[in-house]
Length: 145
Image (tube, rainbow, N blue to C red; front, side):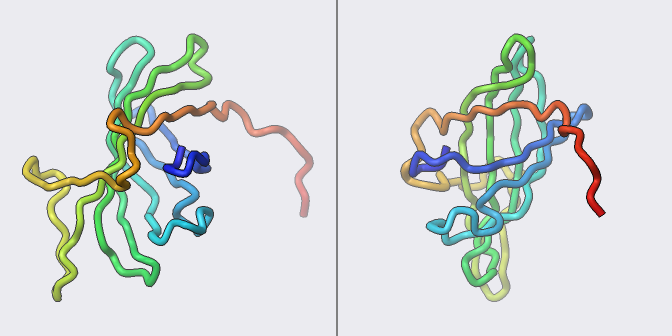
């Protein structure tokens, strides 16, 4: 859920090797009130229990004119349903501002001393709620030329 209470359309792939890739509606103006744009996100996940995982992904944040302004980080804690076809959990969204320069420089996102800040002041202390359903199969249909 976005701070406004709206759901953000998102596609995320949790790869068997522990990698995460994904994209969401804030990338291409799907949320007109959002003045920043982000790149696809890339990260890692690991099992934290029989039906739970935790993950961290990074992405780049640009302003409305296309200038790089920050690095972004999403951390999540997810619990799968018994059939593993859906999950729910919490996510925390943070940014690491870049120095606008010249030259433009961004801090090392892997540095333990990096000063990450909440991406939005309306983020709940325990993170945003997350729910998702697995795309198990693409429906069959006729191919159109």
